[in-house]
Length: 225
Length: 250
Image (cartoon, chains in turn green, blue):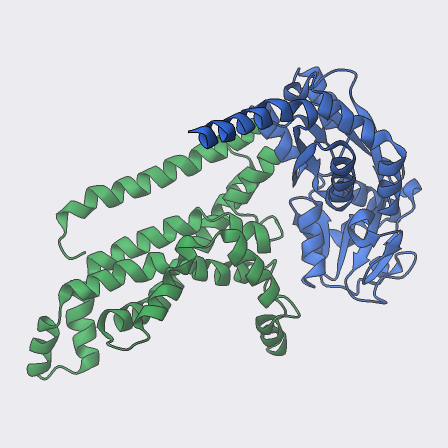
C-alpha cells in the first residue's frame, strides 16, 4: 500500500475539516463581505483589518490565544462549559472554530471584491423594478458574484487543508480526531520516518498544485473578480 | 580622515582579537532542559566570556536539521540514542558523548490538591485529558507509557491522551488548564529544589527506564575551544548544582 491506514485517516480528517470550514465560511463570510463592500461606516477599516489579521499573524500566535481563550479558564471556555459542551481544544470542533478564524480572509476578500465589482447600478435597477433588497441579493448580486464565490471556496478549502501551526498548538495530535495530514507529516519527520513523510508530503504537494492550477486555468475566462 | 582611520583600526582590532578571547557557540538543547540551560549559559558566559546561542526544541527536529547541515556545534539531547546515531553517521565527534543529566518524570496538574502522592488519581478516571509527549519521539513520553503499562492502566487511560510534539508543548497543555493531567519533566515544574505550582506525583525512577540525556559535540564544533569548554563546564560542580536543583539526577 502506498499510504498507511493512519495516513489515509489523516487525509480523510483533513478533507472533512476543510469541507466543514468552507461551508461555515460561506455562511459567515458572505454577510461580512457584503457589509464591507457596501458600508460607508467608519468601522470599515477596523473590521477589514481584523478580517485580514490571519494573513499576517503567525499561526503560533493564533494557536496560543485560542488555546488560552478556549481553555477552561478562558472566556470562550467558560461559555462552552456553561453550555454543557466542555472545552474545545483537542476536539474536531475546536479545529473547526480555529480554522474558521484562520481561513476567514480567504473567503471574505474574494467575495468582497466580487460584490464591489458588480457596482451599485444593477442593484439600483433591480430596486426600481420593485425587487426587495433580499430578492435583489439572491437574484442579482449572488449570480453576478458567483465566480468570486468559486475562487473563495477553493482558496478557503485549500488553505484549510494546508493548515499546520494552529492545529499543532490546539489539536493534541489525536488520531482520527485532530491529527490532520500536515501534523501526520510532521510526526513522521520527528520520528525519522522519512520515507512515510515523503509519500504523504508528495500527495499534499500534488493536491495543492492541482487546486491552484485549476484556479488559474479557470480564471482568465471570467471577468467579475 | 584621522578619525575614520582610528575607528577603522579599532574595529579591525576588535574583530580580529575578539574570537581568540570570546566566541559564539551554537548549541541545540532539548526542550526539557530549557530552564537549567539558561542558568548554566549565563554562569558560563560570565566565567569565560563566550556567548552561548541556544536553540530549544525537540530532539527529533534537531536530528533532521543536523542531518541537513544545520550549523549547531553541540547537541544536548533528550535521549542517549540520538547522539549515538549521529556519531555513527559521522555528524558528531566520537568520544565526546556523555550523560549530562538523568531526567525525572512527574504526573502533574496545574490545580493544587489534584494529584496525590502516589498517582491514585489515574485509577479514579476522574480527569478530562492526560497530556503526554509523543512516545514515538520523546523519551519522556515513552517513559510515561511504561509507567501506565506497569500500573495496568494503559488501555484505560489511552483514550484520554493528548499528545504534545515535545515536552514543552505537553507542559503547555496542562499549564493552560486544557488537560487536567500531564506527564512532564520534573525540571519544568521545579525551581531550586521545590515544585513551584499545582500538584505533582514524582514518579519513582524504578517504574521506567532511566531517561539518560546525552550531550555530544557536532562536526561544526570540532576543535573549537569554546565548545570543548562548554562541555567541560557541563560536567563541573557549578553546572551540576544547577542541574540537580531542577530535579535531575546526574
